[in-house]
Image (cartoon, rainbow, N blue to C red; front, side, top):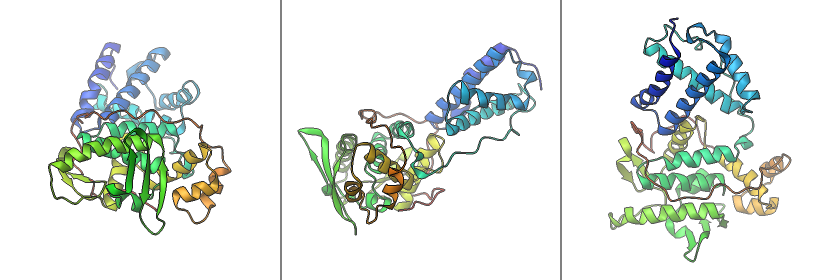
Length: 335
């Protein structure tokens, strides 16, 4: 490996985001990988490590540093190490290094655990990723989908068949509403304030969208196709929802995300609000309390509400997704 000055590596850190954008990475990925690169360079400087003298075990030392000094969770540490490896591959591409010392270093295994391991940090990251979608109606739609799955526990098949007449929002109480859920386990639920507010924001943009398409019969959740979601479709399929989950999961480094994981989070979230197992069975449309009992035996989430919902603003994604909501994702959704 060739020697490079501290100045050169700092310049490389500054250039790294543009390289990621040119490769079509999502804005959230660009931000996280860039942050990972900067943090590792700071670690090198603190340890007085030379770029041309790095050995594979340095990355393992850095992993331990993240776990102890930064109190990083397993999956957060894993994502940070992926970001560092991406940065060193960039240095090889720029011929600053002949080879990366870290490509052969095994990453820590993802802590899949039980489906209930998604926490409020994960959900907050998902909501932020949804807000970065474009166009604005897609951002609002994605946030509403995350809220319905992660806070209210809807099943995939229930969500894609919703129509606007199923929703009742109080115009005088913006953060209150109810939802009639169709299907063989049909029921009416009271929505939490974050879900009601998310749906209210989405409904406002949906009305503007549908006003330009008079006579079009649409379900509540529409799909988008093509680069930068230029084409809209009046219905969402199961494959479409699967792709939404895959797309959002990729943005936060959680490619195995699916609606069932979010439904398990909803059980823990509702328990943290003090709901009884009987009430929760009615809310989720469950016939048996098995999953609730299993979650109830574990420590519940802290009973803190998520961050307040804010009006969605369009964020242009550099090199936006070329996929569509009806593309087939990589993980089956289990209802």
